[in-house]
Structure formats: C-alpha cells, structure tokens
Amino acid sequence: MPTRQTLPPSISCVIPAYNEARSLGALVPEVLATLQTLSAQVELIIVDDGSRDDTLAVMHALCARYPQVSYLKLSRNFGKEPALTAGIDAAQGDVVILMDGDGQHPVSLVPDMLAQWRGGADVVYAVRRTREDQSSLQITLTAWFYKLVNLGNRVKIPPNAGDFRLMDRKVVEALKRLTERNRFMKGLYAWVGFNSTAIDYEPLPRTDGKSNFGLRGSLSLAFTGILAFSIAPLRALTITGFMLSMMALGYGLWVVGEYFITGIAVPGYATIVVGMMFFSGIQLLSIGILAEYVGRIYEEVKQRPNYLVSQRLGQGLPLQLPDQPLA
Image (tube, rainbow, N blue to C red; front, side):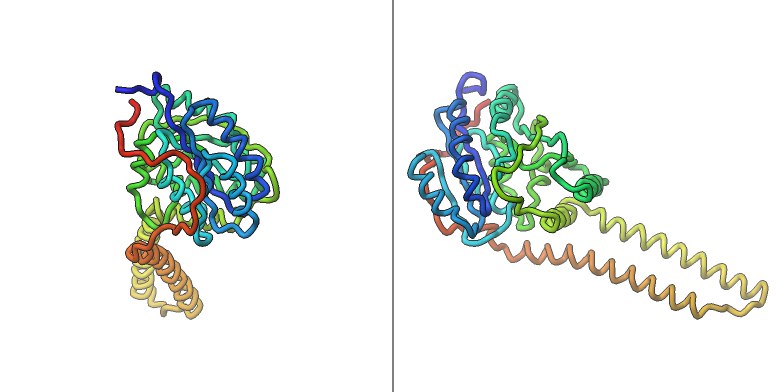
C-alpha cells in the first residue's frame, strides 16, 4: 500500500474569490510556485463567486499561461460557503488546501502543513495568533460566538480557526457527503472529525483593497453557525419558560395567600400591564427564534443546489477514478 511518507501526493488548492482581480495576478503564480516545489501533480482552483470586477479577464490570462490553473465562475454571488463547496467538489488531489483570495493566508505555511499530513494528520488547520486587523467589537463578538456555539455541543469548533487548512482525500469525500443548504463550513470541518492538528499563523496584510466580508457578513455567518450547529437558543427558551412559569406560580400563590390572610384586595393595574408586556415580548422572541429554525428547514426541504457554475476554464488535474487513499 502506498504511504504518505514514500509517495508525493497530488495537491489541489481551492481559492474562493469575490472581486479579487487585483490580488489574483500576483497570488496565483506565488501559490502555484510553492505547490510545484512539493509535488509534480498540482492544481489551483479559483472559484469566482459572482465577481463584478475584471476577475474573468484576469483568469482567462492566467489559465492560458498556467495549465495547472482551473477557473470556476458561479452564475451569481452565492456566498463564500457555497464557493468553498464548489471548489471542494471540483478538487481531485490526494490532499486539498483551502485558502482565501486576499493574500492574507501565508502560502509559506503550506510545506509545514504537508509535513504534518505526512506525520499522520488528516486535517491541518491554521489558527490566528492575533486579530489586530479587526476592531475591538469584532474581537469581542467573535469570542462570544465561539462560546455560544460550543455551549453544550458535543462537536467543538476550534476558536480562531478559519478556512485556511489542508485536508486528506478521505476528509474531502466526507465533506462532499454533507449536502445541507445552510452551510457553515467551520462547523462542517469539525463535524466530520478525523485526526486534526492546529498550526498557528499571523495573517498577512491584504494584497489589495479592503475586505468584502465586513461586520454585517460576519454576524450573518455567525447566526447561521449558531442555528446550524447548536440548539442552545431552543434550550434557553425552555429554561426561560420553566423559570417564568415557576415565578408566576410562586407569585400567584403569594397573591392568593395575602388576600385570604390579610384581606387586602389585589392591587395592580401597573403590575398587570407590565407583566403582559413582558410576557408578550418573551413570546414574540420565542416565536422569532422558532421561525428562524423553521425557515432553515424550509430551505433544506426545497433541495436546491448550493451553487451553479456558469463557466469553466483551465485544465487542473485530470479527473481521477476513486482510488485507495494514501495511508
């Protein structure tokens, strides 16, 4: 049986891109050069998530220059998670590397990742040392998110670990079996399991421009992650409902006891109004949380594809038949 130590693996690198035309011209040759020092069989897959800049023209030139480059243009902007899914589905290598298209993930870390893979790790994920490029609000919200999403969850998502990672072929095949529509890739990486190890890194400055993924996008993704990988909101509603029921029962017994013991008439117009407003708010909040879960169920049962590809360019690795993975 071929082993990881004796044979060089074929390598696929997936880079989702949205309006990164200015970055790709320098990033693609740099990544490709690093991959070719590690293996003779490499491919670099650029997934264009509905870019509105000159990404298509840039990729035409890059695909003509480098036969190892493959370009997938999605029919519209589906989001980073579906774009990553498209790249993972297209990747043919024994190992698959995921990177961002803004140049912040240091390609110099890839040889270290491959060394960890040769040592037996099925997944090597990169963990940020610092978040100096983010605001204090984003840092605080990120910390709260990981605490909440991991609360009472058997599948723990590593804090500060993003999409920058190397995965063995069997991990890729496992991810391809997960067809849910509301995708939170960091949770899916953790859910499939396998032997995983972390490696820390310091993000590089962006090659060009500003991030297309701001606070609003981060909050939306965090909300999807919590609803997709945690039932903590539903448990919080159950606990809140139980506590309020006990409080209401206790208050009712106290009011009845006071009436029969002291004979004081039950006052309380203000108490009734405030109580009604409070409990109405709790009910509306509960309905809203339940509606978010039901809405995601509705999205799942429609069984729409996660993405649509409108154009393909380049060669990449040839299509391979399923084979025995490197041990």
